[in-house]
Length: 196
Image 1 (cartoon, rainbow, N blue to C red):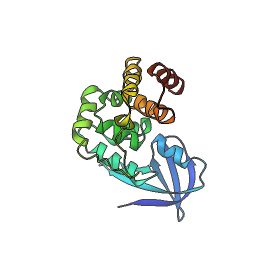
Image 2: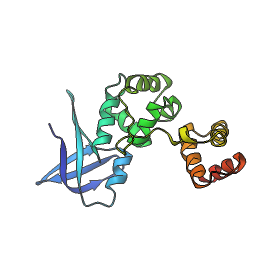
Image 3: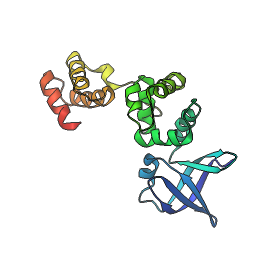
């Protein structure tokens, strides 16, 4: 089994990469997040998942082990294949996806092309116990909004009512409150709207 490929990037598109290792070119499907990580690089170390089927032998490549781990969790869910897993990881990076699953935010998952309400719920139910929060940087921390004041919480609620996702609202409001804790709720909302 291939764990990773290390070599020269000979071809790179938003959906795939070809890496030359000792004269052999390996073609791997990638997410947009991995594409961003590889852009501008001449060589790389790409973590691999091999999907071996009757009719195909397909490689999926990831810029880091964490993204591969999340991908493997995703494809373990009934109804989520490698293509869907890659689509999800192109819409959200692995840290954001952890946060979405841990906070049970099915709406964000449903915004991904090809993910319906049932699949989003299944992903959350199957994976929420596998996502662990830690206080170091290795996985997503508990959302900053949990430490936001009452005024901050009001601002988050207002932003959610305006149609922004709870996760994005929490992130922006937490940042604003950290910079200036004495702002009234209206000012927080106005500042958040500028940054969203």
